[in-house]
Length: 133
Ligand SMILES: CC(=O)SCCNC(=O)CCNC(=O)[C@H](O)C(C)(C)COP(=O)(O)OP(=O)(O)OC[C@H]1O[C@@H](n2cnc3c(N)ncnc32)[C@H](O)[C@@H]1OP(=O)(O)O
Image (cartoon, rainbow, N blue to C red; front, side, top):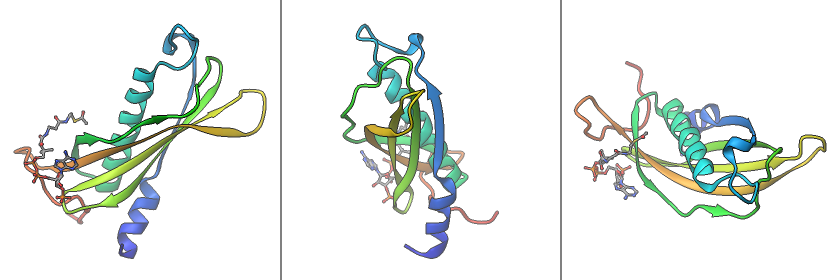
């Protein structure tokens, strides 16, 4: 990858923090999977938009691994970063880290991959790389 692309990847890395309150949990008192997916979709969309500064749509979601439960009353951080850049598309990796509110340290709990395509006003694919208007 060229230095311009690497710089855009670095500057578009997106971080979102949330508190896991009862309205987001399931009957096991852990973060509901559907809520996690919605948050990941939003974080990856913001990341792809900041990377390209173009209209983007989700064309595909890849394997999503839920490796640790996220209990109610914890904090989570979503980290979204572009990992692959194509002609009109890019792949964004999103990790969710969980943190105890009252102890230092954190653990990765969920990882997923989302592919976005940049589109024009006619909804046709266009180059994903930002170009000065
Ligand atoms: C943010 C949101 O909420 S978006 C809402 C949900 N998403 C949508 O509604 C999108 C609906 N889909 C579409 O409109 C169309 O499929 C489009 C515009 C995304 C793509 O149109 P197509 O004519 O299929 O595009 P085309 O075949 O030229 O592929 C475009 C790029 O997408 C990639 N692509 C297409 N399908 C897939 C797929 N299933 N998985 C991964 N990449 C894919 C191609 O490899 C290509 O990448 P590249 O240019 O970097 O090599």
